[in-house]
Amino acid sequence: MHRIIAAAAALVLCLPALGQAPRPAIQVTKVDGADGVYIFRNGGHQAMFIVTPDGVIATDPVAYGRPTGGADYVAEIRKITDKPIKYLIYSHHHYDHIAGGKAFKDAGATIIAHWRAKERLAVVQDPATPLPDMVVEDSGTVLRFGGKIVELSYVGLNHSDSTLVMRLPQDELIFLVDLVPVGTFPGLGMIDFHPLEAMESLKKIAAMHWTRMIPGHPGQPGDRLGTKQDVEDHIALQQYVSDVVKAQARAGKCWNPAEAETQFEKYKDMPGYANGRAYTVRRYCGFWGRGT
Ligand SMILES: [Zn+2]
Image (cartoon, rainbow, N blue to C red; front, side):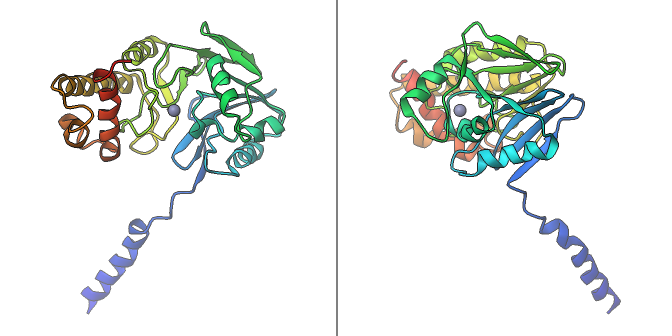
């Protein structure tokens, strides 16, 4: 009898662990050891924002398919500061990261992006995603505001043709979107991926001075930030999958049966592998089987 009660008590004690509260859709986290730097997460996307004494520098609204996402992001910033939201920086032109900029524009922000992002957004004219007010040339620029320095660097073609690497030298941080998955296999995006040039970009990013990377999708495990080791690991991953698909392409197996059958044995246990495998084969079949 006592044993049954004890077992029942143990079961009750275990329940909170088994049935953990669902992860909130929206979450704001202050980055430890960095001055005024926060991560805004909405679902599986995230962005960096910086609170300075003079106002806020925000990045990526991450509101694609989330009609209130831009306003929700502004509201989260407003819980921390009533200073003006001065800048919104688009990491690249893909809507899953930058749709929702309108809420920031309405709040008075100046929108900054790489010049090619502006060209692409001008063609599509999404009402939720205003065109940039200022563009960054390939030579990059440095934003100095409220005592913060934000370097905006273009490191060439890679995941897109408009990606900006945002580096905070005072905090040894970078915000980098979609180029280096942190602890996960590359996902389903990247249809406009440039395989050879991406390797050069990755090497340039590895050579920059920083210690922690805020990724555009939460790192695994535990929403962790990225490190230089993640960049090195990703270079190795891209080289490996490229070599595997190159052999398939030379054997005449692209697109199929390569896409249906190719496995990347070294990465089979990595989170995201099941979803990302076929897209990765397609991506490299597109290169080794067709050229770019
Ligand atoms: Zn993207």
